[in-house]
Amino acid sequence: MTARTTPPFRADHVGSFLRPQYLLEAREQFFVKKTIDAAQLRAVEDRAITEIVKFQQDVGLHSITDGEFRRTYFHIDFLEQLGGVKTDIPVTVKKPDGTEELAPPVIRVIDKVRHVKDIQKADFEYLKSQVAAGLTPKVTIPSPTMLHFRGGRAGISREAYPELEPVFYDDVAKAYGEELQSLYDAGCRYVQMDDTNLAYLCDEKMREAARSRGDDPNELPHRYATFINKVVARKPAGMTLAMHLCRGNFKSTHAAAGNYEPVAEALLAEMNLDAFFLEYDDERSGDFRPLRYLPKGKIVVLGLVTTKFGQLEDKDALKRRIDEAAKYAPLDQLCLSPQCGFSSTVHGNNIAVEDQRKKLALVVETAREVWES
Image 1: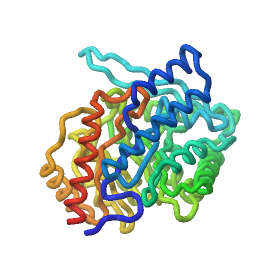
Image 2: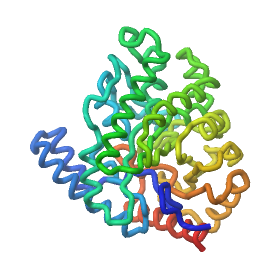
Image 3: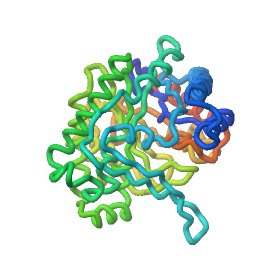
Image 4: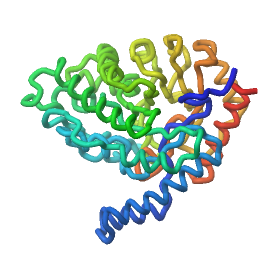
């Protein structure tokens, strides 16, 4: 086994990082107090991004993100910049036992979906300017399936789309394709789409919610595979396009659980993506048998290290889990990462900055020993 020279890398990561306090304060000054302007906020963001780029480089990562430091939410900030899309912020619901659970945001399509501007290009250009030669800047964007799953047919304007097939899916794919092309033209070669919806379809309560909206949870993964492939068909040649499946990541809470089996074939065998980041940090994700669907030429990045809590995983235990996964997919088609970002929203997970560093260092060290020794 050898190191990979193209993304995803043997030691990779999902993308978001804990925001420094001075950045949180600047955001409050801009969004709440209105005491600084957009240019002043961006200058603070630039400083924080320069620091988080160095952090990633120092810890030994080869893919480098901007930590999603310019966003409040990993998905809303992007989706609401597409023409025809309206979003509402998520809320935290307190359950009877005192624990908290994330109630996802409402995302509605109110008009024809279209790409009205380059959403990530300027942010990528700054990131690229900070990344050392030989390393790969990565952009993360939400999956296009979010424009359908959260509201189903009822969440998409019947005036704009009397029928969903094929016009709605084609319009969304065209908008995403234009965004990918703008990023490619700016020099981006690595994009990751973050998708909660396929992971949610592993959870029986989420499957029932889909049924209540008039969708068949057994059919949806295959429909989404066709949908994603419309986007992949517009991907510029030479760009790696990956997908991260997430079960929710808000202040160390999750929104779904369940084995990947209900979606595995549609995800791994039918989607023409280059790589898949799968959460496997605890029992919520089930076993590795779904990896048997992984075709040759595609990569699964095993998210074995949790970002939700600070306790550090045991390296030998990680190696045993990688060996277990390799019973179902070739070791050469596997990589290692944390299961999610450390701060999918501006609020961040309940984990210390130093633990964030230790987790990533563990991923880098373990990957080096498994694949490069």
